[in-house]
Image 1 (cartoon, helix red, strand yellow):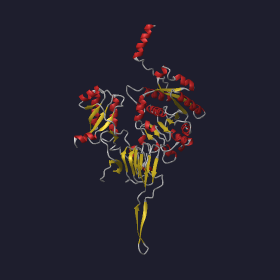
Image 2 (cartoon, chains in turn brown, purple):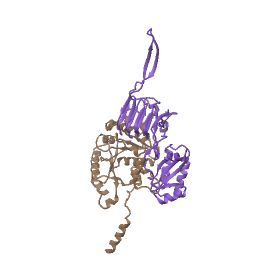
Image 3 (spheres, each protein chain N blue to C red):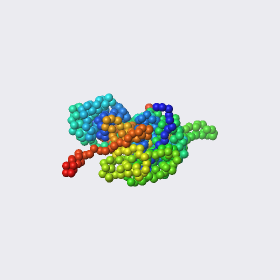
Image 4 (cartoon, one colour):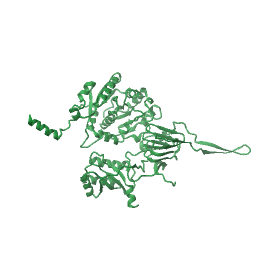
Length: 275
Length: 270
């Protein structure tokens, strides 16, 4: 890779809980690392940490970010190296503390230190708009907003975008629409992609289809983006594309159209005949 | 060892959530590499392949992988008739319904010291907490008032009882021994200067003898801790645990032996 350019600090946030912030952080991070970048993931969800489980690194944590800011260890000692890729590591949150154990200023100094060594710093934000969120965005210059095509999630995303716009340091933000079900969009049972983009007036970074492989991967501690082979899950491809887009490549959005079921085809045939 | 005992020892490996047959082989390899449960050559395993459709080629690959680790497959569980037939052709003993899981058994936890984790824990073992009072002076004074001997003798550490479940995020810390009547869930931490005894399941982090008492012990009815620390030694859980379905083990104890933490079945004789 060419000489190290300015490292990018990206916060992944959503407002609402359970929409896929941590899953997206793990997969985008692993996706960028897979492309050869030096990546560090920071879990700022102090007291309710999960990123370590998704990465399968839970049993390797000795120190965490709170130990670093309270001077119990050096930053390098708290970084947990990924077991698959040497250019990927995790700065875990403390499980036995709460959000007040960290301040935005401390977060900034940790990130400044990490910038020296890494191309990408991905910050996994906790749900909510309180101190945890403030810590997470404090050091970021870009944001990824994760939402699902549901009213509650979209409203919370709107609130978060409003807050991000008040932060001078955040240069730009984009949306990941998660858990999309093309079949339901087709039958108008789910808001479609354009609806959400219009409501939020935001640019799209990627669309992730609902995929049970995500659950399998989460439980195994292996980001789905790292699946290889001929029958790659759609979510794998979707996250790889997002990583490529972040790195500057121009990749078209995936078409998740499911093949028309056989019965439907037969029905359509009859309809045609009758007309 | 009789055949019946052998069967009781068979560990159970669940490959049913593999996404493809190649993935099933990969999973099996990872299981066998990650855990050192089956170090004894000739150990037996049971494999559950669930709804996977496996060709004779894949099954023979599964056999080859097991052989490489010196392991024999005792029973293959499968829901798919084709897989069952292929397994029979490969000379495997085939059954349909896998037994329900009853217990994990990390007999030989991955007992490693810090060098495997690439973390300078040992150099950082400096206590950041209050040091417990480990020693008391025993003075013997003779008739003429002259101090004859000063001997040092450890006082027995105080013991804290905690009769409740320790949940994720909770920390129990004592400058003595800790006894928990209940489970210690994953995400919890137990920090003691002395021993830790859990009348229940240990799933979180336990640090016994945290100020350097390397002869401290950690006991639990079942040890499945994310990490074990004794003195300045540390051991982490293997990435995959074997589910032993057939044998419920007795209480387990972790000690430092030969410079690393090891887990033993806790027997009466010492």
